[in-house]
Image 1 (cartoon, rainbow, N blue to C red):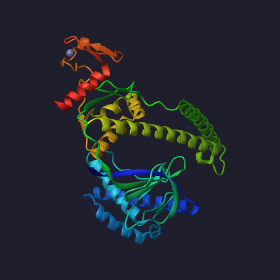
Image 2: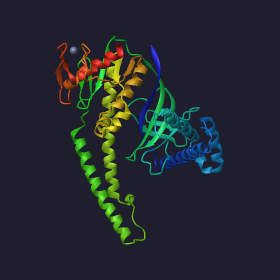
Image 3: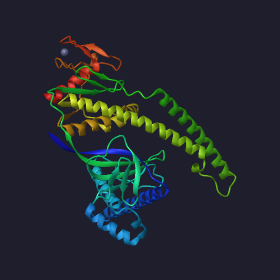
Image 4: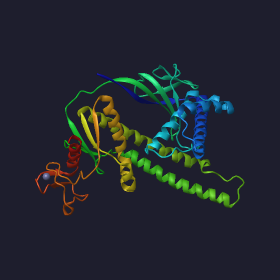
Length: 388
Ligand SMILES: [Zn+2]
């Protein structure tokens, strides 16, 4: 059995000077169109109008192009993608899944634009070259082969000043075999997850050297920035004709890039770890039950919020969601309720005086005397509420 899935393949690309310039033009045009369209939507709403849909926004882009002829320098499919992105952003907002779309600024750290694939304008030439609209043939390096039907490609400039291309392809993948196994997954702060079969998956540990270097550069960045701000203040105090800007301090910029570089490495390690883990879980189990992560409750607790972003639980949940869809498995999101304080063997809910505090790792049920490992018990409760 095969299933058709969309898959994003990330490649590092190496544009030459003129290609970099063209990319910058594209970033600028897309940003301009985004801001114009967003402004139009806001003004229209203020005047009692309704939301303008993608198709009509595309018509507006045509008039924008006549008014601002320099927009013609950009890849036209990427401008159309902007109206799709605005529509998506509005829909997320309407469904209360996202905040209201924001205007984009030149200083926005991550610049990107997306080209749609129409009539072979995006084409893989060979293992190291790909053709993209307006920019032409560009050399790339990628860990995997780019196979399948190309749908679109997003060109991105990272905080470390590297160019990447994320290529979205449609491919056929075989479904995973059924195993008749079910599992419940509990997320906890000291480990990444505990599973109902007793497996405990530890938190991601980054390369010690990497964490150390990142910390060193973070300290340097803080020190250099503070010094630069002081100098800027003195410039202003002395009424220097052209007071310097933080961007003029090359040592600050260097430290910023180094911090971004190590963060990027950490992010890659985390993603890699979660990708392998989620594939393994989806392969081994037919039904996977996991607690529904409520962002509202999490954000209230700052300590927890930081732990959660470090752990990458949300990323893990998303990976499980799409991989279950890809490979024909089932993911059940269970509302969190007393999963820790209930005995998974007999269903006894611990009384107020018996409640487990955070330091209790193992306990015995007062009713049925089953010995429980705290987090594995919670995982079993999650599985129970999905199967009952
Ligand atoms: Zn019990």
